[in-house]
Image (spheres, rainbow, N blue to C red):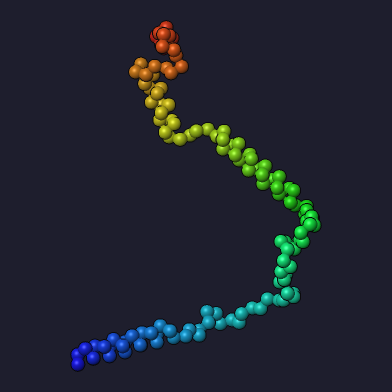
Length: 126
């Protein structure tokens, strides 16, 4: 008997919850009427079956901006690649390695990698 009352209470509360959740919202966000845009005819181009509407075998006409765009795009891309290839290395790791090598050479712990093994005279002049 207690199980039947619990089941009825759950079913009733669930029905109420579902009814409240699916209640239609008919209230508008704005009280003014929606503005209609002026129609200037149909803007839909029906499909012709050709890519960009150009049948095969015919050469598409170049527009005036296309050549400028291609040269500008690929030219700036090429300049960017060259600039990236020749940019200076400003990483902290490179600086720290050069600074550590300079300090070790100044203390005499590390020899200059540009010197040959038998070149003692050049090492003592520092």
